Structures are given as structure tokens and as C-alpha cells.
Length: 110
Length: 120
Image 1: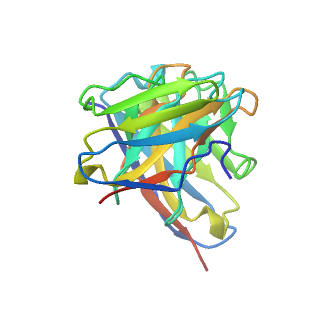
Image 2: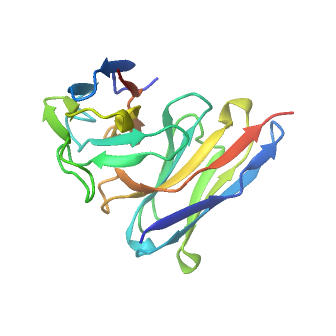
């Protein structure tokens, strides 16, 4: 059971926007950076966002991140069929000394 | 370019042991902390262990503490995970991953994973 809560699934039509929430607490999201990962079926996770809002080289600006208090959000605009994947948030917990991944959100493009 | 290649997975009986390796290349291995992360079939990502860049500190998930040991050999640019007293619930694909910046924990580059199956 993760301390980071994500919605299990979301769906939207191609071209639309989805937002994925990641809710935590003061010792994790409230104290440390959050990253977001995309995992396509049968592949390793891929870093999409780090330090709440930054994109690694090569990640399109359709993917964006934000933070509010002890929650973080990943937004995907201009949804494409290739965006169908599982998305995970992740952060360190300063008290538990454990890295947590969120429970994961499966995004479906209608 | 950064490359991480895991090996050592396989089928092992409950109570048995296995050592996973992760060969790193394309970056200064001694300057980065490293993670092991696993994913049981059809399940989400579960963090397993982290070793600091200098190898002097390790952190473990409660589910593996006392059974698994993370270590690194700087001279071989290799990360290890020694897994003892294996249980059926340890069955998973195991990924190694590099922290994106020393002291900041979040993984950036990941290996392709190696499958561990614990079954009699």
C-alpha cells in the first residue's frame, strides 16, 4: 500500500487533456521533489517530469507537472494513442527513509 | 549514453537465494546513488533498495529488510542485489535505476529488467 494516492484509471478522447493527481503528505511530497514516470506495456519506466515541473531532454511539452501543498499533478495535453500507458508519481519520504511510487494510473485514449 | 543492463534473474525455490547484477556504463558510476525497483506481474512499481553514491549508506523497503542486500563495485561499474530467504511474493521483474542527481533520489535512467520467479 503506497502512501502516494493516484486515481486507478482515466480516459479521454484523442486531442483532449488529462490530469493525474498524486496525493501524499508532509514528509514526502511536502518535503521532497516529485517525479513522474510513463510505463508503456512490457517496457521499463521512463522519466517524464522531475523536480515537480522539469522535463528531461526529449520529453514533449504536452507533458507538464505542478505542485500544490502535499499534492502533485501531471497534465497531458493533446492526448495521442501513443500516450496509452501507466503513469506513476514517485518521491522520497524523509521520515521513513523510503522511496515511494504512487499506485499508478492507467490512461486510455478513447 | 547511459546504459544499465540487469542480469541474474531466474527461477528459484522458496527459501533460496539469488544475486542480481546491474552493469552500468556511459556515466560516472561512483557519483550517483542507485536503486533497485521491482514490479510483480500485473502490479505497480515497488521500490526495493537504494545505495548512496559513496556506498556508505543503504535504505530498504520493509518487505525486504533483513533478507536483501544492495551493494556496488566501483571498479566494475556494477550494482548488485543479494536476495536471500526468497518468498513467492518476491516474484517480479527487477529493475536497476540511477538517481538523476546525487542526493535527490528520483530515478532517471532504468535498465530493461530481469525476471525473478520464486516457485517450487
